[in-house]
Image (cartoon, rainbow, N blue to C red; front, top):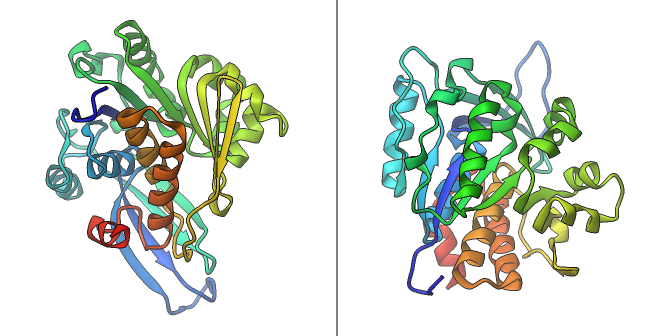
Length: 303
């Protein structure tokens, strides 16, 4: 790809509003505690799309929102971020909501409230949705909703047919185990990029010999949080340290890493630069509250 051409990426998956609750002292059931409550844009595919757009890619987001107030606000946000959204809101459906409890050390637990009417059906597939793009990125949340599996199968088959690169992030080791590891592998492979955290890598590989993951993808990227990130490809391996950052909230940091890595790789084809791009963006997000903090702060920090 020429340096002056924008990477063209499709992000396929979930779109949601995050309702974040943070309390330094934990919850006290039956009573009140002081803390912080925020709501922000979220959903792993949406987070990825916004950060990829901010990094300079042309982005099309394939996901579903309800025809409600939260859906309208989300679509306005995507428009402002330069993210193309070709699908119509679903009448009668509630836009997804995720409750995010943030602990004192920045780690989070999530409660998902997703309307089943927002699942993809085979009839949603249209070849023209994928024409003219370089890469299809999708998340585990698309797979774990079994109602969307037939649509996903058609999308992956068509992407391979027309030569689009495919990147997959499992997104949730707990849901991955519930879905079934072997079934998941058979559904999503072969891949060009497998983006996963260390816990997910252990499940996929069966042990710490992560070179086994190269049987599933041409390039495997393992996100290690404060430990940086590792890429494996063509019998080569490269690890880079994380950028130092105070941990405020880990929500969406992995999605931002994926965007930083994949956009930079499509721009230059260099694994080291891609790892640096992913690490830098992940560190910025983890040091802020919410999955899509203002890009102005990130650009200021890079100066």
